[in-house]
Amino acid sequence: MNINQFYSYLGSSIIEADTIYSYGELANQILQYKDELKIKIVSGDVVAILSDYSFQSISMLLALSEFPCIIVPIVNTTNSEVQNKLKAGKVTKIITFQDNEFVINNVESEGFEKVDKYKIITSKKQSGLVLFSSGTTGVPKVMVHNFSELIAKFNAPKKQKRLHFILFLLFDHIGGINTLLNCLNNGSPIIIPSNRNPEYILQLIEYRKVQVLPTSPTFLNLILMTEDLDKYDLSSLKMITYGTERMPQHILDKLKIKIPSVKFLQTFGTSETGILKTESKSSTSLFFRIIDPNYQYKIENDQLYLKSKNVVSGYINQESNQFTKEGWFATGDLVETDQEGYLKIVGRINKVINVGGQKLLPKEVEDLINQIPEVIDSTVFARDNSITGQMVCAKVVIKENVDEKEMKLIILKKCKEELEKYKVPSKLIITHSIDITNRFKKEI
Image (cartoon, rainbow, N blue to C red; front, side, top):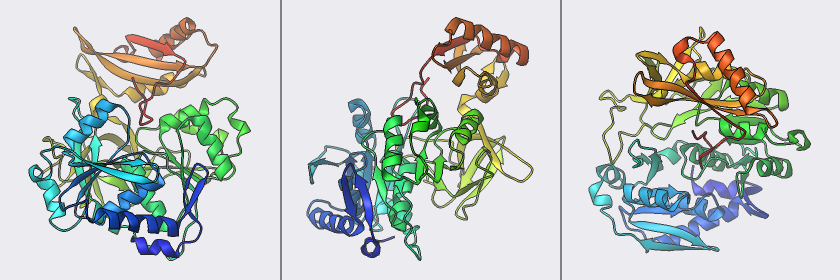
């Protein structure tokens, strides 16, 4: 993919609120920023873009990709989270936007000279892209991709593709970056939401005739909870892609009933590996297969391992045994396979619950609880126990106007009847709402 191909694309590139930008305008903005950056960016700079998606931030991302620097997209969430990422990423410059102008501020940092993985990329006159993954100590894990090579993977199509996408996943999320680059390469119109409220997204799909929605299972469950879902005209919607977390079967089943004409595709990838090309067995199945020629995979002890030149070589700020000497990355995802070789994600290795030496996956209990008609969603997790080491806990979201005490009895009765004793939740939390993170994953 290169900027010049944008001039051959017809129609809109980015739709932001009521403003529509053409592909020609996008190319011009990228080149303008590139010209202005020539006297402001030096080789080896570690540059943070503090923004979510906008015409300006997308233009800046692509302009910076032309320089031998490291790019660090950061969405403004909490101040402490932003500061932690700036520090962990060893950022030397910060770009923000005021109206249609950008501002660059210098940051005191150990920076580039301390990070060998940055130097490997910039010494080749290429750009890097920093992504973050949550760390167990509260310090984000930092990884860098060769952004120049990532962009170069996208080959211009023979014919422009005009599918309308919503950019739902965030600006600093690998899934969001992948969607962005794919759309730009194909010449597709990109709709940028002003917020990610379920009702607003549904209105936007109707108003802008959106055809593809990339999102998370938790957000799709929030859509199902939306009052009067049927009042929205979603006839333009052709496909929903979902990833970032495990999709419960009951949510997928409900979605197919509500919007039967939509195709559902499970995506797969991690910040460390990038997004792989996948193929779902069907729109109602959680089984998928990896069809990406750039990746190898294997399964050891039920855990999925990936190998590719696209996988980062490690974190810049901490050691990890997820990266093997042979070049494999242990994803942490536990999978099962069917007779045709399709994969299904059944859990995370760090979420396995150990009750006195007996292990279980949260999915085993969640799938049972989710069978109860009054249940909207359930999350099963471990808490420390002085006797058994861990105990099983469950947070269950139920429908409005359903008695909480009565539901607790119904849930426990079903679990005791159908589960082994150690799998029965010792603690049960009943609620009427789903708590979510700012990345639209369930929060315990």
